[in-house]
Length: 249
Ligand code: PGA
Image 1 (cartoon, rainbow, N blue to C red):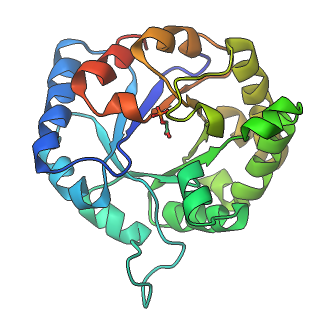
Image 2 (image 1 turned 90 degrees about the horizontal axis):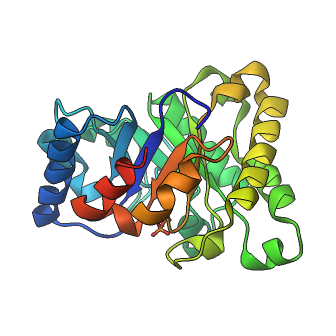
Image 3 (image 1 turned 135 degrees about the horizontal axis):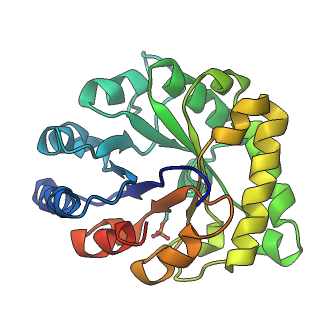
């Protein structure tokens, strides 16, 4: 991994009730005994953020939201603002996840506006990009992803901490992953798009890989050029599977 510290973030998606905080506590307990030197984050559903922040206070595990509104406040029933996430104890927020893009019609411009709102409130956005299977089959993966980066990363982020997560849509929850060579090719394209857009600052942005990361493929992915960590869905839901990935960092 090129950057000094791997950044490994669990995305619980629409999973987790009070009882599952036990998994988060078990992850913290494991890290206490096995200091891995990685930055570790967990993004539970919004309803659990404040309780998880309390449960993990002092452990070093960072808490994040899974989405935020681009608006600061007002008449937006059901939406959660960046400031609300921060108030609840989050320091991170995922924006532009492919499930948001597919289920809620979010476009690159919406994602950029959310990232800007998040950074403006002191949250560190994790901006997700990734190609469809069809785009990969026709050899357009790197071009599509670089285009998403150019359109989803607002210029204001040159002044803020943020990360990009490369998550091929076809690899999410499918058990399929691109080869290490394919991951490296897309990560290099993301790096070029970031430096082209943000200059020197773009060279330091962590680029995470996401999509069916498990304990048994994590070490190979982490060793790939330009891979600065992972965004983990299914395998972040239990301490047993998530710590298997952390052990590979
Ligand atoms: P997965 O999900 O690890 O279950 O494939 C990754 C993600 O969607 O962030």
